Structure formats: structure tokens, C-alpha cells
Length: 144
Image 1: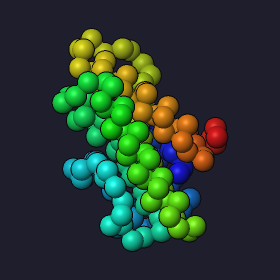
Image 2 (image 1 turned 90 degrees about the vertical axis):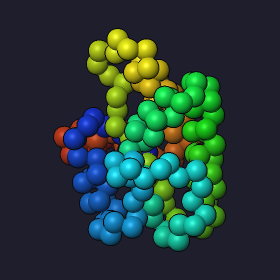
Image 3 (image 1 turned 90 degrees about the horizontal axis):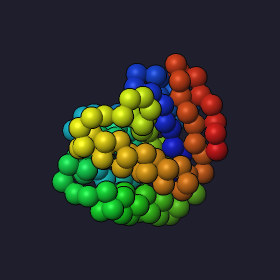
Image 4 (image 1 turned 60 degrees about the vertical axis):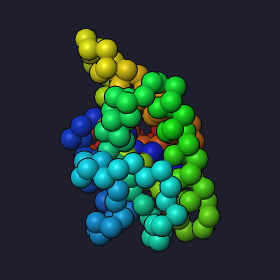
């Protein structure tokens, strides 16, 4: 799994498209296009899959359940995704998340919870990823 993280509108999507030479839309599952979080990937028959908008799914989850449940559900998704990826040598999973954990801490409790859950989920994702890249202004820095 390759985890891509960076600020909003910092070129994460463009960098991934260029790096992986992805041009077809069917390689993407996007929360930005109101697609639901894929808990399993068994029906996906491509070798490359890009999942983006993690922070949106986590916001929706944090609105309906507590932090421990959110983190457990996220860990379950990661495990299922890694199982899919490891089922065939040529498979590659790319997860893109926008970093919302920097800056001023939100006043509203629900937004603080979302920010906390996102930070924990990103830590879990980075820990389970083979490679992690931070994208700022269209430039990558490999940190793992």
C-alpha cells in the first residue's frame, strides 16, 4: 500500500496520476464523488486502485459513532484492502488523504473528534503502508 498525504489542493491527485500513469477513471474510488467507503475490494478486477477522500469518509463515520469504533472500522478496512492487494503480485493500492490535522484546533467538539480520528487513522495507514509520500505544491517527499 502506498499512502499519499498532503494539504488540500496541493497536487496529490495530479502527482498520483503522473507517478502511476493513471488516466482511466475506473481506477479510482473517491469520497469527493460521493462514493461510499469500500470495506472490501473483492469485486475490483484492476491491478491498480486509488482510494481518495479518506478524510470525508472519516468525517461521516465520526458523526455516527465514537472514536474507538471509527478507528476499529478503519483498521478493518485497511486489513481487507491489504488482503486484496497481497492476493496478486501485480496489485497496487494507493490511498490518498488530505491532511486536516494542522492549524488551529476547531472549537466545535464534533470537528475536534473528526480531526483526532483522522490523525489516528492516518497514523494507522502510514504504519501499514509500504511507502508514504507527502505532497506539497505538487512535489513529493518520501517519508517511508
